Image (cartoon, rainbow, N blue to C red; front, side):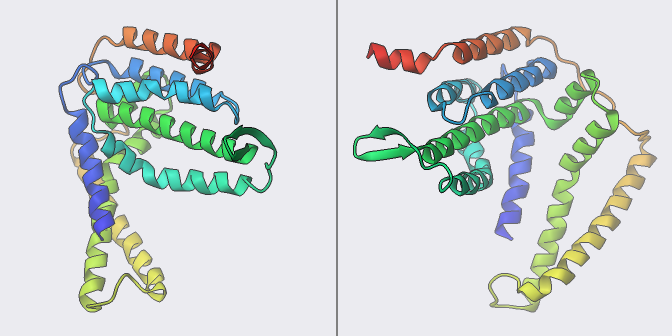
Length: 262
């Protein structure tokens, strides 16, 4: 239940960060979205053994976290589940890629170990880029930018509805968990045999809440899409700087050159 409360706080935390008045928040959402897409494409284009190149791409999101006055702990805490998944995927590759690529002192680094590091670095930096985009823009503005790129209106509406009302699903989960804890005092967690019935109750409660939400939206004039919010201008210089940064660090092995000079 503490995890559900923490998840709700994380969603509200993103909304609070998006409502701040910082230089990054004041930029238009479309250039920031395009900058994030360019950064993701370039970061993911590195090979599975190009660790130095991927590390060079990590300077950009870390710099944005510092300049936009974000707390790195918030982003890293949200990255934990993704890190676990990527680690499991990378560990599965260790037995198949056992060729020794380099030696770090007495340690022999195999291809599987190096690809695991590259996978974690790519996942971390891409996650930070997306997290900074949402935390500085807001999901409503991100969906509006997607509509400007002629994404299907149905898709952007579904994304926005999921983001807006995921909190309702979490609240229903908290109510069910609280009711179970009151009926089984002293029991740690939920027994496996009760999962099926509790998930069924969660589904039925969610359907009821969704119907009420939809009826409320219709009463307020919902016609299949949300009206655009306040328009913002600027941000194209930010996009140009991002493209320049990505082009330099993709074309030039900056870290390798610095290591040779040192």
